[in-house]
Length: 107
Picture 1: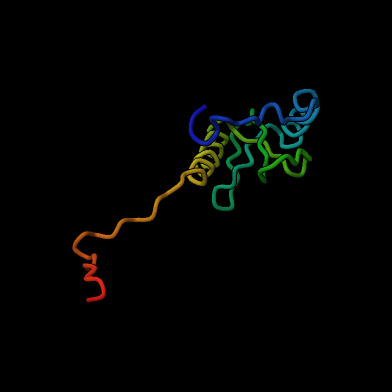
Picture 2 (picture 1 turned 90 degrees about the horizontal axis):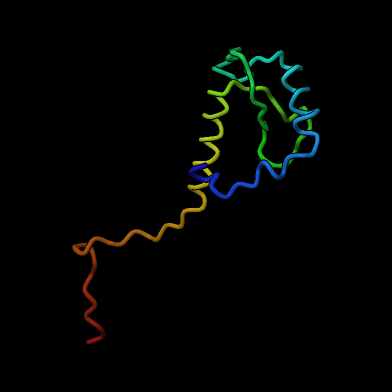
């Protein structure tokens, strides 16, 4: 993986029943249709991914939604980029040399 997901432990944090119970339940509940909201209208394409609506380790079905691969990639990319941006340490901008006032000392 690239971006902010490089060191992700996401898969290891999934509960033991993720693939046997939770994932199949959510896909079935959502009718294998993508729940991505496109301005008040759901995508509706075939969903084969299960996504956490709110980040974290809340694996309750109310925090899970079915997404198509395309929209899951978009959401994961946004979250990864946001994580990478948060990790970036920025140094303060340097003043332009023409804007620096000379130090004449106390003469």
